[in-house]
Length: 198
Image (cartoon, rainbow, N blue to C red):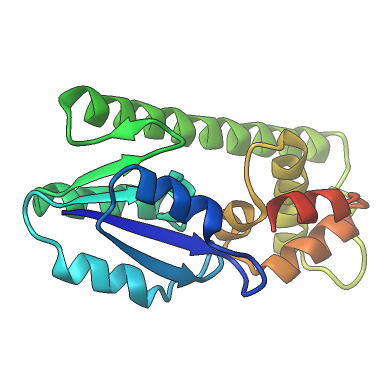
């Protein structure tokens, strides 16, 4: 059976675009979920995982609709593999029901993880270079040293423009509101970014 899973972040968003694409791809059943990207509570996804049978295929519009983070997405795919269930992402053109699709998925995931590691390494190197010059990262009163370092990471992730607000918050293990506070603290203009990634 082809089982569709659609997710939106807020109640004022609609499922139409995702559902239309999933129905066109031949989904016989579609589960709807309203939950932010970083939300760990996804009862509809849990229902799907519980009732899957060997040979079923989960279809999503984009991979980011399924996983909270890259780590979570890889965990979900591992569970699907053990259950002998396929995963298809329409926009990403990924299909794990084929050997080529499984290979492409893991290569894509590896590059995404590699890119995040590079960002972290550049941030660490930048902090060390700033300390060597006697700078402390511009920490202001009211924010801890750890929070300041996360704020610097948040600014770098934002400037890279390759991660959504939800992904940045999940990676830094902070809420979206805290992320926005950090970006304001770093004097980063975030209105357009919030609108684009809401």
